[in-house]
Length: 141
Image (cartoon, rainbow, N blue to C red; front, side, top):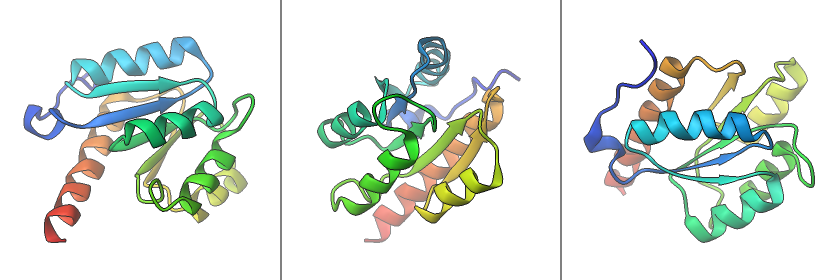
């Protein structure tokens, strides 16, 4: 009902990086994810997000579009060119739902696109599905 259900086994070791410039948004998402037993790290712009992604090696990134210093699209473009970061699943979480923004993010291979205000039940379900698929792909290698 509130997007708080999770499979503890799936999320025990999953680390999620939230990149957003709105402290309230970070806090709300972080609280929900931690309640579902995910490890959460945060960044407030794309530059910091790239640095945290490189140092923390998250299993998934929730990425806002409009941010200072480096926006989400630029961060995503740089990630996809980096051999270490290129395969990290990214879910865009943004108030922007214009077709051109969705198309640009999709061109860099995002896993999903979620608009604000966030439906946490759907977000947690999407995260769980993406991480499950990532685990299956890793197991096949």
